[in-house]
Length: 592
Image 1 (tube, rainbow, N blue to C red):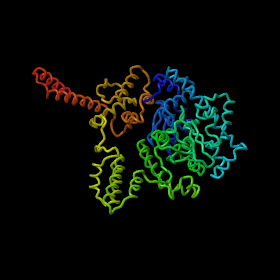
Image 2 (cartoon, rainbow, N blue to C red; image 1 turned 135 degrees about the horizontal axis):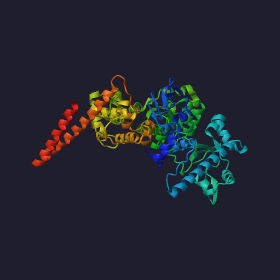
Image 3 (cartoon, rainbow, N blue to C red; image 1 turned 60 degrees about the vertical axis):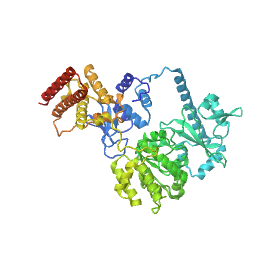
Image 4 (cartoon, rainbow, N blue to C red; image 1 turned 180 degrees about the vertical axis):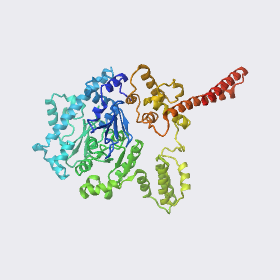
């Protein structure tokens, strides 16, 4: 797990000084039942509480959506921030100093510069917003009135206006900022020997990150021009348009107050503004640039499901196809709306209203269906080449699907278009090349532990889960380190042993300090292990230990057998056979 240079000792001290119940209760209403606190999950919509907080073990778990973690991962999810920023928030709550994570003087200077830029951008955004009250703001007000943008919407998005080339420069100068600091923040530029406002005479959209910080601007020209309509902040230490998602701060607020089923991704800022004003509060835009993996990662912090709703023109369709690949690779569930009549979302919702737009959203097609049906628009069933191209292009879509049931569904869709039998299509599927031109193997490379017998994996998981969850029957176990093959599980076992030998309490929530449990299936299967009352767990624990020991002996026997195939020396061969005999005796004794 990336800890941004924070030591494990400091992280543990932070968690020791933080009560997860008091932190979680700042976001949701908790009710205590016995030793557990309950609430409706803040990460998915539900009416009956299935979200629990364990105060002793300092971790949370939702039995509805499966999400769980320690207090740091809870703050990360609620604030959609990284590990360092979550620690920063908790350190403030615990009145702890956040340690310096580097001795590099250049990085320290960079951090100071970034803090200054954040302050300048915040001041600038507020001033642009106040400028709309000026007598000289008529062009911006007329444009907003023409687009039917209401005062409440202007305030929600912090829209503003740059009066001229010098007004913001003089204002920031009066606040004590230098020209270079303004330039570093991306607010002013140096032209013809003078520092001037980058967005002079434009309607200004502040770009606000998920934590509520202004990181840059996008400014729209208000009169006809040969230049681009929108001008974005140039790249700075804190602004990178390949990462910035317009409206994500408001979507985060919507999630925290009302829950969030999905996020709608549109092309432009005015699409987001128009949808928000009409009651669609979950729309974002990617800063007038192509979708990037960074955008996808930012969006995935808030949801697992997205609806792509790009313009209905040719450029919008191409952007949709590219966006699908990036979003699917990021692990998002992707649905697509084909905008009718060539309209953009802003035009559509203003023409037909929210109810009709909601119908579009509800009718969104799963990305695979959208792509296959889009391929079919050029299909000429009477032309063999056309049919062949359709099948080939559609097979590329099938290759991206992760389950056999999905593949079967969409192979049948191809069959409906072409009347080619499923058996033939399956053969094409196995042989088809992906976009890179390489034939894919029929199965992915398996992880090391997945090659082991299922009985071994079940046994080691049960033993480690019993020890981690402090089961009474698992208190006195001889060292089993040699029986554990997975490196992460070895590390988990080491933590358990360390607690027992040092007398420290074995707190399940501390596991999240050492592992990204949510992403580590080997560890999450142990942390979230569900014990059953259908069996005698103590007896099963003993049988698992015997099974592991027998498995270890089998591995040693296999190694000796391999050596025997290559050994020619009589003495060495005799020693190996003796070792094999002893192993068999030990194994037989253990089986009794």
